[in-house]
Length: 322
Image (cartoon, rainbow, N blue to C red; front, side):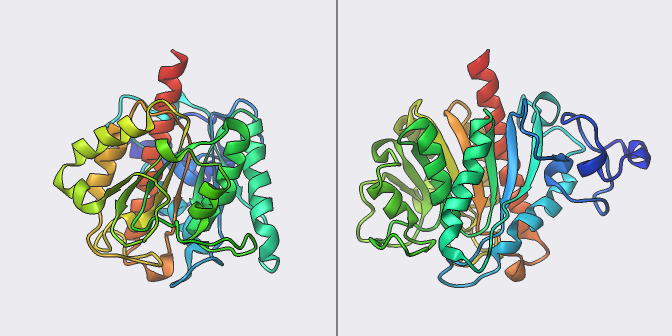
């Protein structure tokens, strides 16, 4: 870490002139943005736009994920002074990354929220950039998937989670973070045959045919689980959603519906790095709930997962454009 450079590096979220490059700003100060990237609404020539969705009005248990984007940004301040570990790519120096800020919406008009979020993501995609979203509860992935399906057609879903979130719900007016993938499958925006849910450890009588690699299977052989994921997804355009409760509560206590027996942080990061080669077109990290966190360890886990997703997206972009 080049601490000497920190004397002249401050508030990079607003003062840095180049979307590329490491940042040596003091981790304990300065304006917050994810990985100290520029805060901007200018999407010209952007490879990947980070954006927060501070929404938690679809939870079934503990709230607080509206503060998740802020916690993930804060936890990320320890990372941008070095290249990411375990990768042969450094998106901070090789790609145009921006912090697009948070979604603006009227919290008192919950019924309007899904369409507002879908338009927000569609704006990013129309520019040619991909999106990496920080939640927020997991319902937010449904409107995001609609925007992606409008561009790519039915999309493969790679879901890291403790729950399938495919409980039956045929009421389109309901907003629920446990039923949105049921609705997405029924709406035809998920390619079920080429999707997979990883880390599941709760029962659901009907998972709608989505392939599942449950937590015990991951524990038994994480490398085999990665190979199975790649075989299922193939080269299909894939959206990767990471519910932080995929991790065991020992590693991520700050979440709304914690379930014991989950993945460790080490397992999750190893798997994400090994997924190089899948056609990831976007992703999110959801369900970080700071009010229930301990020492911001869940925020830290979320920030590291988010950076792995960033590396995965940019690595694949580089290889496909080579």
